[in-house]
Amino acid sequence: MATVGHTLVGLSIGSFSKARSRDQKVRYMWLGVMVLLAHLVDISEWIIILAAPEYFDQRFVTNSPLVTATLVGAVWIVMALGVRLRRPWPYALIALAVFSHLLLDWHPARIALVDTYHHSTEAQIPSRFEAVIAEIWLYGLLLVLVGLVQAARQRDCPTSGRAAAGILGALAIFAAISRSPFLWTPAYGLALLHTLLLFRREVNVRLLWSLVPLLPLIALLSVELWAGHIYKQAEALRKSKEYAAAITVYQRALAVPTRSQNLSAYLRLSRCQQRLGDFTAAEATLLHAIRVCDNPYWLHCRLAALYTDPDVQETPFFRPDEAGKILQDVIDSPCRAVIRNHARKKLERLRRQGLIE
Image (cartoon, rainbow, N blue to C red; front, side, top):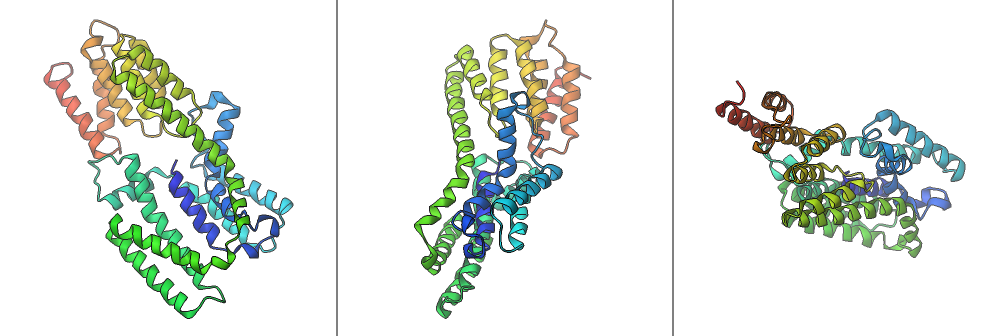
């Protein structure tokens, strides 16, 4: 869930049009509505998960063009009946906001964005922090440029204001090309400040109504933060080697209905179960995680490690041949090079140990 990216794109699309070009009912909520629509796919799936817990951890809405188109149609109907927009083109912006989710959450695009910004290679796995910074870098530039263009297009914008907008826009682009946060951060800040100054006559306390459409998103983020808090408690217990207590807390964290991938939690939970000798539970946890996670290649490697761990020798879980097949599948997969190399080293180690041919 690219929360920062979706938010910045929603703000950019909302800023693309002036509030006074719409019906009075949504004039002061338009920005919030656009941000909500940019997150609508995630929020819709979260609501379905809350209503039907048996589908928890299954990604059946995200990245579905058909479901996304259905959501767009539903929003169009609500807007047509309840708001009665005076012009047809805002409906195109609504569709753009909702469909932007498909691109922003498309895994290859997200990985390519992080690799491009951080000069990463396939031999590296980007962290969540690196992904957030990359999103701010690219989608923040989009927001800056849209804001400057719209501010400069105002009828009462002075010539000096337009000239400054052009200069700051060019500065933001060149700063973004440098990929240095010490350059693009102040450049974006100056550009946004100039935009706000040009729009100062339209700033109104009633714009706080834009927060109302964001309540579902705030609720979702609150649940995500709560799940993260529980996960940290489980991590502390695991590091203290209190594995039984850690298992209980990990299970509590995984039971919270979030939209985030829980790959790390599943990995740590399985390892704790293995430490306590509950190999059946450890295997079941990994197999379940493989079914529900989008990119479970690390989970495959961990399952292979379970099947060849010295602790499982003399048990039905000692399956070196199956582990070898799993690792070979990972090596042949399109996953990142660092994971393939990890699987290749494990496979070579098993061969040196004589566990597989």
